[in-house]
Figure 1 (tube, rainbow, N blue to C red):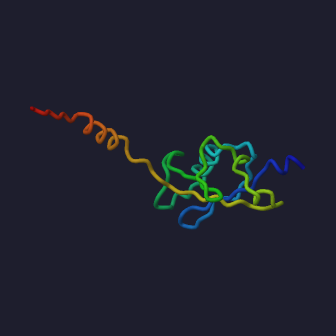
Figure 2: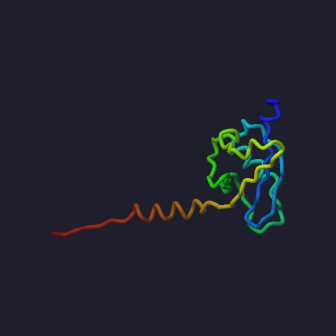
Figure 3: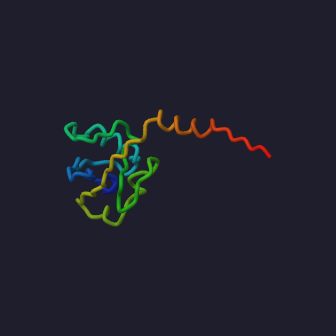
Length: 117
């Protein structure tokens, strides 16, 4: 019976209401691995698509899950319902391009201020 409890049925709800899954994951699966699975199953016809795992935010029970966390550590009382499927929400937040970040940082560092007394 412990083998059944180690597997969790999870479906991922995208911002536009489309669902990915449900799919069974072991309790030891990291959130980073969940994101990789989501990225692989992402519907290609959607307008906003993540390019990397870093673009995805996974939310469960109102908490943004960290990549190093396992599914078992995120377990809520709702996970314990036999045959229940847990819904996690997925948001796409693309990171700003590195060129823009670097340009802003460089412009702040290259300023010189002189004061003559």
